[in-house]
Length: 316
Image (tube, rainbow, N blue to C red; front, top):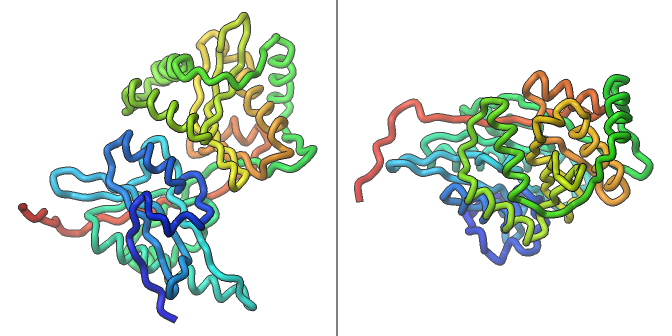
């Protein structure tokens, strides 16, 4: 049984039958490519005419050199499996190993370097490691949602949540990207963090994703003013929410409002979604906050490869 592959464009109709997760969704990847001026293709593995796996590959080009990346404002480069059911399920482990080896071979042969975040559902790195890649473990926190689920908060966070609930915050889902960007800018300035995306381009991205039904904005409002805002990527097909970006006014940093927004999101969507991924857990303070909310720690990998010698770009 020979597994082959093709490189498909964003709008290739043969992908229409595949249930692509949000970070591989055609509308999402198109918006991200336009934001960062990236090249793109889907690595697509086949057995005969059947698609068995799909992986989005974003490519950053500079002076003839090409690098596969996980862009800013994306989070994972998932491999989407579409393998047939097997009488012995471990047979698919072997197929996955073969396919990840094919992906590694393709990336090495066509690019100068690679730095991509895989999604938490892929833990077998052997196909990449055997091809000379490194696989760095990274971490995120998430909630497995189900009816009547209640986050198991640390005592301090439970007290903070009760205080926030008594301050009169109103939670709504008004789409107000301009106000969100104001709060995000304040947050970045406080944290002395540079943000590489221009406000106008960022605004266009938010409007496009919201129009496509891929983005929720959840706000905490007091005295008719949005004082904290949480942007959530909405993977409705797979019933997964991703806490994507957030910003809070400096006067409300110690109010518990950020915790309130996350808690309210869990309660509101626990009956209709399966997972709420908080997208991150690699910095001590952030990891502490998410652990204190009762979220579960999950590992994912960043695969990296760089040519050992300089590849001279061909002149045209």
